Length: 152
Image 1 (cartoon, rainbow, N blue to C red):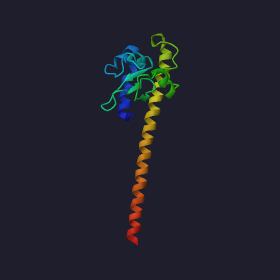
Image 2 (cartoon, helix red, strand yellow; image 1 turned 180 degrees about the horizontal axis):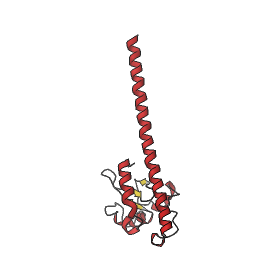
Image 3 (tube, helix red, strand yellow; image 1 turned 180 degrees about the vertical axis):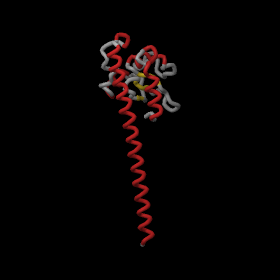
Image 4 (cartoon, helix red, strand yellow; image 1 turned 90 degrees about the vertical axis):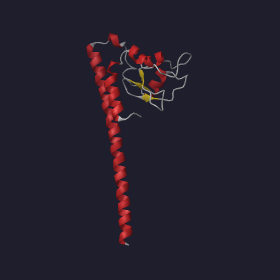
């Protein structure tokens, strides 16, 4: 999973990714081409942007719901994989092409995209906070145990 900084960077740069053409351009180094179900065109059509890392060349992230999927197989259907993991993604449920949206519809979609982003960031920060609490508790237990040993 991406770090908070990476998530923020993606969120702010993906505002232009309503365009399928721009999403498809991100798949320059995509490992799956012809004779696959997950071609760059199909990945872009399902809302994905290619965001590889050094160790994971096939990471794709939805520009809207920010779900990150990796470990693609040639016969994976991008739309079905996306819908299986985030069926309520605003991009997947959009009834119109981006170019046909009214300003109000686009505004509501961007509000939803922002809510999803904030929810993900909050969940990540809460997980970091829980980890810090667990570490602190372990340190305190160790300290108490060592103090018990000294007092005996």
